[in-house]
Length: 84
Image 1 (cartoon, one colour):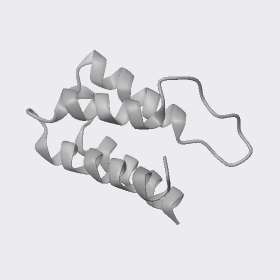
Image 2 (image 1 turned 180 degrees about the horizontal axis):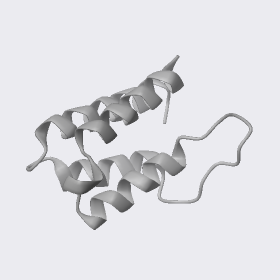
Image 3 (image 1 turned 120 degrees about the vertical axis):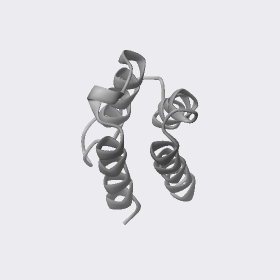
Image 4 (image 1 turned 45 degrees about the vertical axis):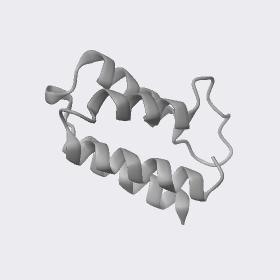
């Protein structure tokens, strides 16, 4: 369930923060987050961790994109609830 919720939240974040509105740094961070959301049986990605990537993205978007930042905060809460 948390993995499904995480994927759903990330999809909402992508919808609220389209590439055309994201800086190149923000796009890179979104790509890193997507990289970390992988299927069971796949190797775990390298650093930075998923949590670190979301935290950096949150810092980047918080002032200009408050709705997207709220979704990123939900992602962090979901990660915390599953022990990441």
